[in-house]
Image 1: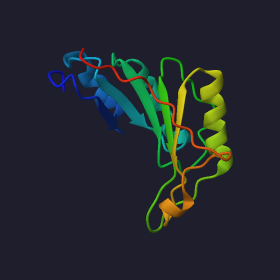
Image 2: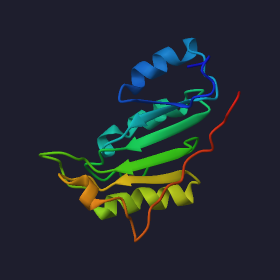
Image 3: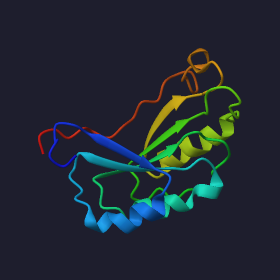
Image 4: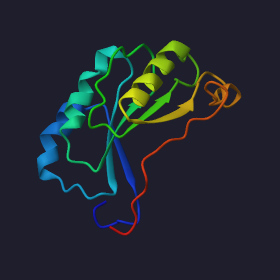
Length: 144
């Protein structure tokens, strides 16, 4: 990844503790974006581990969002991606959960990307939130 600077790598993990253990021995070029998954309030602790990683871009994937996350400290977090679970036996995502994250992103200056509502027919459910798409994302760095 460090040699392929023409690519941007988005690395996502649920194993934030392990990431923290390995972070100091890894080389973090600007084209490596690191994220953690936070599905509900129970997993917010992963954000604290992410905040300590020396990645150029740090992001949270609130996907699949299966519960309210409550208050989240987004200090040092560049980007939030929100999406519902899809496929058979998927759990529903509530509008209030999404809006809670969106409001916090706005007040804490974190970019907000709404990926999908999810569901069994995710294409049919689409990705409109409040009548529009939300496609904010960090700027891509090229040739570093």
